[in-house]
Each structure stands twice: as structure tokens, then as C-alpha cells.
Length: 157
Image (tube, rainbow, N blue to C red; front, side, top):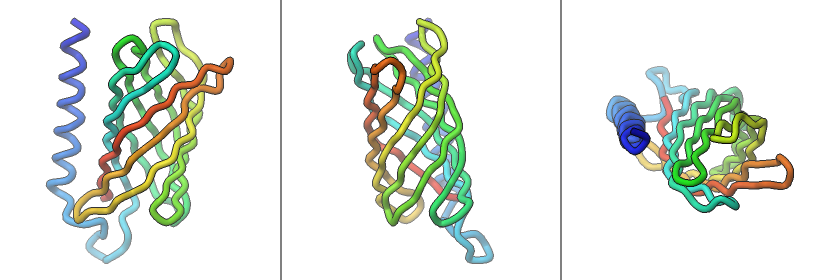
């Protein structure tokens, strides 16, 4: 049963992302102002002491200033890791670089754990969306860390 959930969730996230990309033709609204909302689909991997597993996720952020966005994130690592990370996040923007900080809850077979995330990304802007190589470190609980890495696909609206 678990093996069917993963492809369904991944397909659902991808369809949502493609729908938003198809309706958004730029990151400016009708008044010519910069877009304030961003939705990102993450595809990558998580590595820790339990092994390495495919990871997918979704981030939403609202731009408060040119430097700061706030929002939320959710990531799921499958395989032997089998955990989901959920929490509010602050995103800091410096030119094309982004820094992510997030207190979060990690849900896994072992229960629920309070954890944190710090990450770095580099945004490569394309016409209707952007692609970002992403590296995050999750953990801060008892010296156990996970490294989450991959690509983020973002759209501003």
C-alpha cells in the first residue's frame, strides 16, 4: 500500500506546479510590481546514518521585503529514512542566494521530534520560473544530522 502513495503524491505535486507555471507568464502583476508569493517544488535526496532516500517537498513563501520572506515547508524522505518534515520557515535573499531557516517537526516511525533546518540555495531565473540547487541540513537533536540536497523549481505569482 505504501508503494502506491509515493507516486500519487509526487504526481499531484508535479501537476500543481505545472498548473501554476502554465498560468503565470511573469513575476510581475498587472501594475508592474514584483510578485510577493512563491511556490517551490523540491526533488532530491536525504542522507543520514539510516542511508540515502529520495525526497520531495513543497515550500510556500510570502515576500515581506526584498531581503525577507516567511512561509512554510513540507518535505518527505522515503525509503529507510521514511520521515516527513513540516514547519514554518524564514527565507533570506541576498542577490541570487537564499538562506532558509526553519524550526520544524519531524514525523517518522519513531514518533515526532522537534528539529530545525538551515539551508542554502542559488536561484537561476528563467522566463516563467526558476531552478535552484539546494542544500539543507536538518537535525540539531542529539548530534544526529541529515543532509537534504537537490533541485527546487519555483514560480512567483
